[in-house]
Length: 196
Image (cartoon, rainbow, N blue to C red; front, top):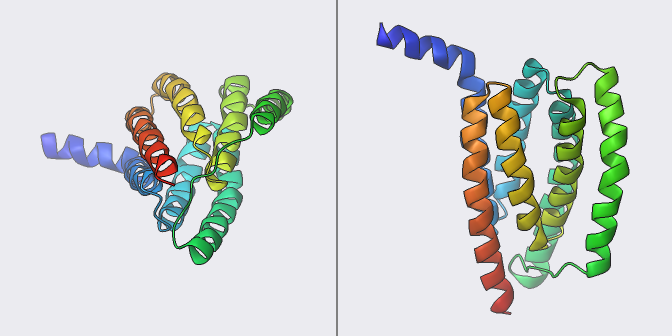
């Protein structure tokens, strides 16, 4: 009986579990500033695109499309830096860029929430706010700014509650792990910046 239950659970959540594991590996590689983080993350993005679409989290599914674009950009940007400097160098985030990104996230959240509501998304405005600021965090990560980890900690903590509400337990557990990885990334990137 237990084997049947496990098989049924894996059939229902196998794609989500694969996405969770792949995401965790990709983020861990990002904390270590390894260029291979980008193709691993790309695989996770495609897995989660399907998971979120099936769960009715349309903003999260759409977010994965933007993540594909940002992932290719980040991969290229980091690769170029490695070619020029021999490593992924952490770059400080100017205060004006911090303010601009936070301010731009507000109308972005509203616009995405309105679109998601028209598409009958499960949690349109919460989903849209998280999507908007996830894009900001991803942009900062691609640009190698330490601040990306602070924003990921905040966004991922809120995502945990959303995924519990949507009964996506492996993903909620993943995001709890992502908070821990973001703390690790913050620590490691600070050390890398201090070593320059």
